Length: 213
Ligand code: TYD
Picture 1: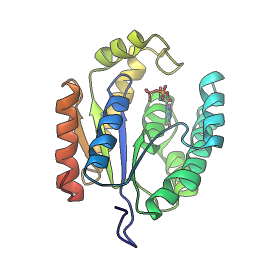
Picture 2: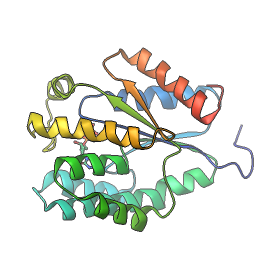
Picture 3: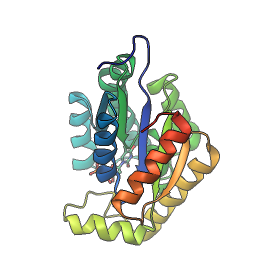
């Protein structure tokens, strides 16, 4: 059963620090929404479109970059992702669940690396136009717990290798973003188990987006 004609899909982003369980949640959430009969696409950043995946290789494989250059690379990848993957899906009535989006740039390049909010806002306006997530689930976890999980995976990227201070600033930034936009963001306690985090997410989706998942 396809979406009703003219119904735009909803755009849900998952945000949070390292090892918070975004990937596990995005898989479970997508499966659950699909089981409810909703057309749904799971994607992630940096990446999610061929050009954006190439830029991901540049971001993660090179550097350190100047913070503005690094933010511009993230937004270049994001613009490709939006133009080629996210917007066409939403316009076709498909729900999009995206692992990281623009809030990650404000947290990592802003709070983490010193990029100003003004530059971030300018890049958002340039790259995204009016597109903003309908709902952002912020998975909150003390960084030392998240880093334990991330390091146990054994393939730490250069952000994960930053010090405890960096990760504390990133966490505080996500909480500040959520406090600043409580209508868009729901903070979830990511120290709970995967099923509980999924249930909390579904409750937030029901409450904020009004679907019977
Ligand atoms: P990834 O392996 O996808 O990590 P994770 O599973 O934690 O999302 O690597 C993405 C890394 O890029 C992650 O450490 C956070 C960082 N990042 C930024 O610094 N800024 C951004 O705008 C985005 C989207 C990601």
